[in-house]
Length: 93
Image (cartoon, rainbow, N blue to C red; front, side, top):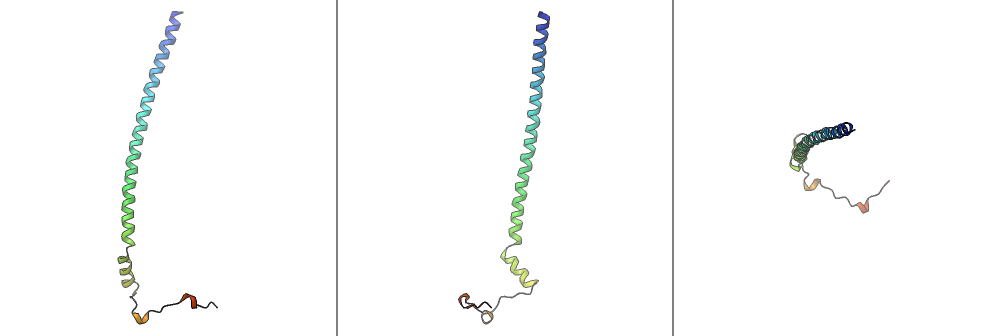
């Protein structure tokens, strides 16, 4: 009887030790994955900042005016060419 009880207790201790080792392994694996994802997230933040800078550079007023003048042959109108429209006097046909 003592032999069976000792066998059961030692088996429980061995199974418990294996479970602790396995849980520790899973914890380290998940921590490694977390570190990788945090690094990946920081890289995404850096790329997002770069894209915002690029977006603001492409849409700057100076660049838009330059393209309008050079590619579209647009010019700033002179005073005689400007017509003021009064919205209250507009007639809709």
